[in-house]
Length: 103
Image (tube, helix red, strand yellow):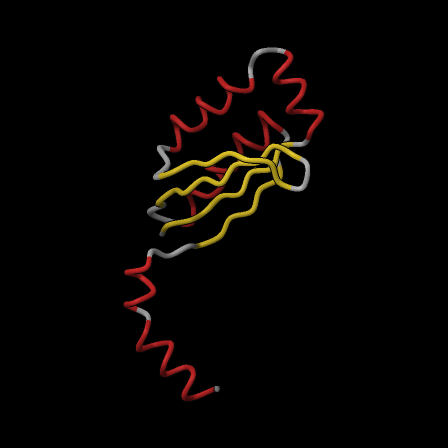
């Protein structure tokens, strides 16, 4: 199951980690454990933010994926199941059936 993790770091926590020279190493350590398919970092709503794509075998892996961000960075997280274009293409018949039944 491919998921997109949106990680938002509070300004105060991020600033403290930057001042301590630890923000980069904390993020690198977490990413080394997660082995993401992709990771992008930006600002969002005035805070440091990352969008991280991870392929999970099972939903039970979500806590282990999320807890490092909670514990190390006091981060806010959102976890969304995402698809590749090929996945959406495979779903076309099901989407059409649902549209016919409920649309």
